[in-house]
Image 1 (spheres, rainbow, N blue to C red):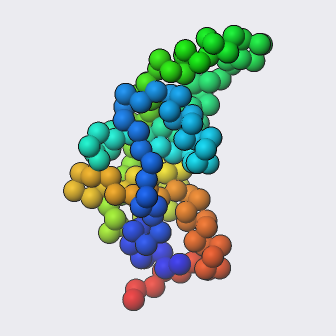
Image 2 (cartoon, rainbow, N blue to C red):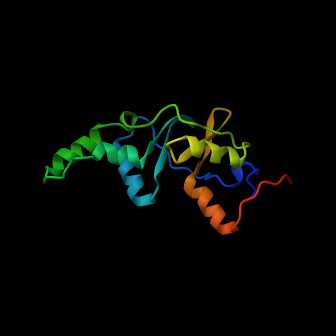
Length: 146
């Protein structure tokens, strides 16, 4: 993988997103069924924030540990919106930015996903998993101008 290639060469383009008014139960279903760890929150393709699996688990922390009533938990999951737990003000990149820029952001940031935004619209996402998967496939990383 050429670390000077545009991030668009490795980003995920087919996105599952939620609206800020979506329930936390909606996010839980995506995390469970799609094995994702980050869900962009958008209004008309404009990025508002991101919900991570960590955000979700922090919300769930401590509930149902002592045989708590499942009905209460279901009400809680369906009545809170993802806007309540989403992270705002996150690092973003443009699709033309280089992969090595993502590596620098990941080194400095606590998130493991960077939304890719072009002209104010969400067009993709890159995660640490994407980078690791491409490195494993290519068996090498280099920085070389084409």
